[in-house]
Length: 494
Image: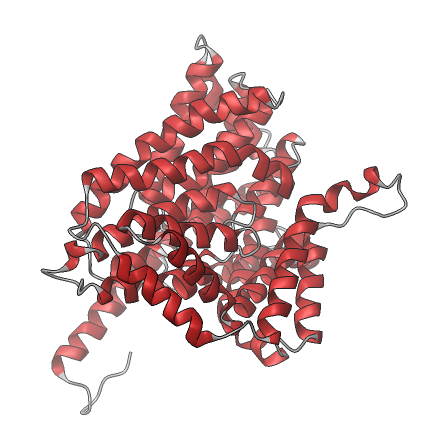
């Protein structure tokens, strides 16, 4: 903690408060680990498995409280696992060789190319020019842009904060809507709408946000259900598109902007596109890579079947790496761009560590024992009643999490095990928990990475943000829990 004659008294007090707050957070993390580690080991559980549980729980709590950045917490957890002999060091570090982790890393780099070339902004301006003549249309235009980008870019922070947010902010200011008295003219409606749509978009694509590949890995590990890119998208497309139509309408009805018609936005988009001129070589290369990666993610896992084995299937992590190589060879990105992508390396550290710890915990059988014990609470219930109750608990538990990743790594496997033990069909449980993992982020102003960006702009009060988040959660639950199930029945999945 830096103090001295050059530090003002009020700054020194703030530093001391921050230091005390960090110490309190560390005390909670350490106490959680100690409480489990010092509890007598249950019969049938090995001491190593029990220590792994203690470290894992402490890591999750640390990721929520964040006395230091989440990646640093996970690195400490991985080190503790190796240091205490819970896992050999090679096993503790095995998560960093997982294809899912490399998929997320590579896709972050693709998002950097989208922002660097300006292609993402060009796509947004084209949507605004086409359907941005009304304030509701502006919401749909920018949500459509994000949905298109999400088909390849799993960095919701880069997609939403790097491409959509700056365009939305400039549109609000163009109509003299700024934080404070004029927020209600356009900005407040637009910011809430776009964040709520972003949450739905996260649920539609396997690449909607960084934790979805982790969910797919957990599902395969626990149930054998393989959530490929195409299967995830096919399952989500009908309820997802319906949510994207309904959610802005609900917000428009309950929280309407003062400015209803926005013809100037469409004209400004046209003028900006004229200033940008024709697509550059870098944009064309980026667009080609974007299309190639999206196409291969859809069909890559079917190539062997279609060609009689003449062409092997292509894992989606390999597809992402191919895309990065093309961008490097085409000089759309250079190596310095990749090294400078701090968020990508940050996610790589926490994703690899958490994936391995969660996987190792599942191998111990502790989660199965938890499921068997918890299933006893639902004895005598119809399986669909148990499933509905557990899904609601899982959904609204997101009030306690500051990221989808923390929610997923802490609760997805246990809740999946419990719902299946209660009699729910495995594929149904896998899909609903996967999609609800994302949709629950709608509730708060800290639910996932871009939430603080949109809320932090100052257009919407916290009380209003939470109220609208709660209201929007209801149609989302009904759409995905009813229309979604009907759609999966039509597909013959359940």
